[in-house]
Amino acid sequence: MLKNTYMRWKLPLICFVWETAMIILFGVFVRYNNEANPSWAEFKKTENISLDIQNDFYYRYPSFVDVHVMIFVGFGFLMTFLQRYGFGGVGFNFLMAAFGVQWAILMQGWFHTFEEGKIRIGVESLINADFCVGSVAIAFGGLLGTISPVQLLLMTLFQVTLFAVNEWILLDILHVVDAGGSMTIHTFGAYFGLTVSWILNRPKLAQTNNKERSAYYSDLFSMIGTLFLWMYWPSFNSAISNHGDAQHRAVINTYLSLAASVLTTFAIASAVDRKGKLEMVYIQNATLAGGVAVGTAAEMMLSPYGSLIVGFIVGIVSTLGFKYLTPLLLKIRLHDTCGIHNLHGMPGIIGGIVGAVTAACATEGVYGAEGLRKFFKFEGEYAHRTPSMQGGYQAAGICVSLAFAFVGGTLVGLVLKLPFWGDPSDENCFNDAVYWELAEEDEEVGNHYATPEAAKQV
Image 1: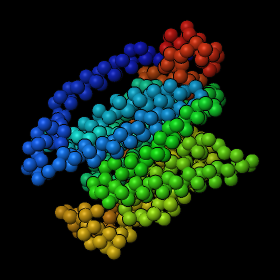
Image 2: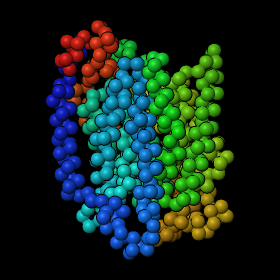
Image 3: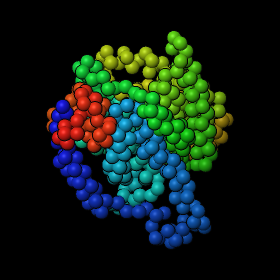
Image 4: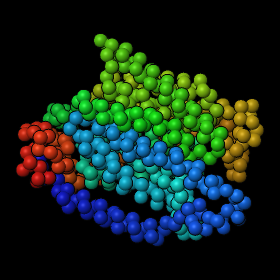
């Protein structure tokens, strides 16, 4: 028997109140930037721009589409591996992302594009908003199947806020380079989600619930998400690059790192099985670790062989994490449904370290005197910096992201632990029937699915 979660009034209430607030805030603060404004023609004259194709839209939109597909299709379908939580995985990811991008545009706008009392948005604002909710999607992976949609939306509200502040500190105060978000997106998102999961710990979950498992068809659907993420990750890491050469390097470095991580994932997955067989969970996740780990250094002169080394290492680390570390985390009451610690957490930290070392080793001989100054923006108040100093600030960025994740995750977890957010009982976690109307042939009597009469009470 499913408990009544009262979603009939809780979910509509939060959605309608939220959207009303967004309409008001967007009406007060948000305006199109110069490149999305009818005054573009006049702006071209003042900036000596001769061609419409120089509008940022034409430069950024292809990358925006790729990133958009990753957030809504890639992450959504990646989380359909649970045999009885496919609707929840892809559906709640959809809800969360649509909810979060609106708040992300506001929060990031207040920090980065606030001019004369208004937030000026363009296509780059949309990319950054997708990055922000990508961090929430990562955190959701650690909690998949154990929280209600209302808890997910509340977590999104708080996490987007913390993400924007953390991003502002790293990019504007510490002045770090983090094109692909190894620190701001992956490290922060993973350890924030893991901290919330630890606070919301369900000590009897393993004894009362046997639905946290996959099936042939659900793993196949999840692989759709994996392949979309794998194909579009070069766009993810290069989407906001400001120079053509940097964007070009980011694509190449990411492409090579991803390819290397696939090979080592298959190799280790086969090696750790006594019969040499492959487990789909490793292939679904660890093959993507190369894209995570190369994120911070994606634009840097990492070199093609360096990218292969990064992918080679994190493919091994991520696969071994799924095999040996995830069971250990369960012993300290840390439940991680999607293995975000192995795909985003550890590779994110490795990516931050790779970025710090690569920055510290930068030389004029490699970048050129002018290129070194322009790439790291050693100008104005940052003109005194040297590559070794930049490496130190890059390392500090990892620590700041972890601090925001642990402290913020603890506080948000305590809020979500309150008993009136409609979360499922232990025996009904990983069960779509708690929040979704299901076809009668999919409804089983007993522990798996409720009867139609019981489902109507939810």
